[in-house]
Length: 294
Image (cartoon, rainbow, N blue to C red; front, side, top):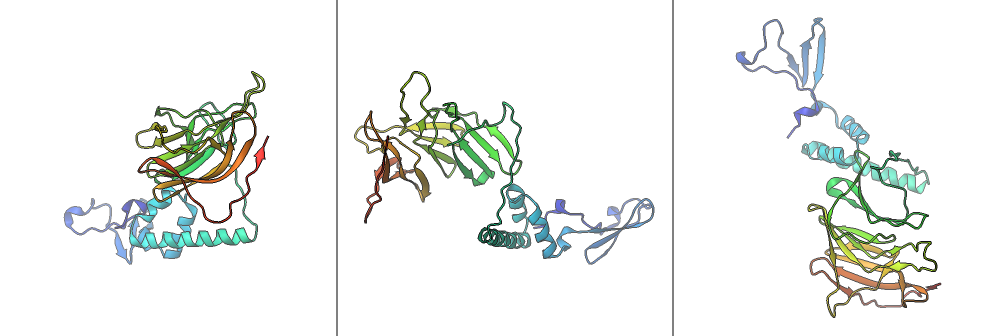
């Protein structure tokens, strides 16, 4: 199915009632090229975009945004879909070639440093959400011992930041948490807070909080451990990924005692998204050595 809005269609008149006024002569059609007369009686050629060669279409598709615009072109028709697939393969090949030659180059996206934009931070967590072609960023901290619990959305097509004003039970301000995407939800786990300068001699605080943000409902929901339920210890700096209907969490910084050393973990915890329960994954073989930090 062709999209007529993507190119000029030749004017074809099949019936007498479809013809324009007599002072405007009808167009002649030859091989998809329309011949028209402008006000100066000059011949104007109009070409349907479907008549362009595949090489030209692929060149055009390489110039547009690889997110929403590219997906819209992918859904126009079967021919455009095949052209988009070849463009994707070409981009991947170029990426790997540039990676092997160490020719990758970063480009900076400058945004307005206004109150309506995201502030400077580090140790935040982020995840890509394919349906909206956007990136979600949560929390983080600054060098002045401040941590955040705000959620931001970055539209990769328009390059615009938007702060997500949501409902429900907000997570605590923290950094070094993990966030993954599952369906229409974002799953946030763990993290830590910067010790503030005053009062003196404060220690870091680690979290074992688990929050689920429903993107469609725009709402946070906190899950708490029930009596006798297995739950991972407070962790920060861990890694997390999604495998089928489970979130798999590895390692992280943990605190074994209220006062004392922090230690790095080599445990694997699995959270079932459907059952909303935790379990520690048994591992065969030799584990990595754990380290303690003062």
